[in-house]
Amino acid sequence: MIMQPYRKYLIFLAILILLSPLGLLLPHSFKAGDAWGEWSVKLVKEKTGTEPSGMKKGAAIYKAPVPEYQLGKEDGSLPGRSVSYIISGLIGTGIILILTFGAVKFTSRKKTE
Amino acid sequence: MHIPDGYLSPQTYVPLYGVFIVSAAAAVKKIEKKMDKKLIPYLGMAAAFSFLIMMFNIPIPGGTTGHAVGAAIIALLLGPWVTFIAVSVALIIQALVFGDGGITAIGANCVNMALVIPFVSWAVFKLIAGKSESPGRLNIAAFMAGYISLNIAALVTSIELGIQPLIASGSDGNPLYAPYPLKVAIPAMAIEHLLLFGIVEGIVTFLVFRYFLKNNKEMIGVIK
Image (cartoon, rainbow over the protein chains, first blue to last red):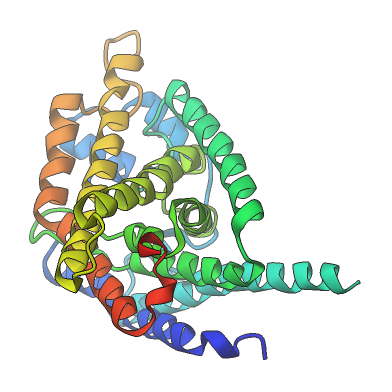
């Protein structure tokens, strides 16, 4: 099995995925908002009184399928958002590992042919 | 530190895309030449590690949040070029799938977090560790590599944000993009990274480094 030598590390990653809701719950309990320089246009307007037009246009350029690591509403219940967070961790990790372990399979197949 | 869409003017994000693409081409060349194919899964797990570490938002009570990137320790293990690719993969997936960091800012974010951190981390470690084999000194070097590299990345990011009002303003004189000038952006980001987030990156770097130093020293590229 291709995963065998990496078991330890994969278990560590799984633990990180399960603990990831801490990244949501801690800011919530300490009433901390978004990172500096990552505020929404609306929040920038609240803080500065201006709504930079380029920023407003730019912010609308792309809509991610799972915004803010949330599958449901961004202001949903905490347990629901925590589950979303774990699933997002799984999705992100899954995509990354499939891409890279896939690359190994692909390159080793090329060698044997 | 993930710059969203709309914060950077095209005059800023286009050149940063250029830096990113040129560096990525250089990295792939270096890796192809040197790297054992067996290392690719480690690159993947490192990318996943960085992706997950960035989900752990740390609050400043009543203020903002921030997080470690994990790029400093990956650099000490796998080298700065492999780290650049690994953390870029994580950042691109964050932008495309989760809207964390803008599409237009992928170049900027990869330069700030995937390029600056690993190279600074590697250099700081070498500088502090020297040729020493004392675990104490090596562990301190690892912590400082994480602490300083995240702070340099925050500084670079705050400069990119802070120059926006100088670059582009509308006919009414108001800024078109990120509205905060350098004298606001630099201290805002520097203080929180000097006092909290940099320390977290330092601790993550130190803890993982110490684990490998004890259990799997051959994996630590920076002391080979």
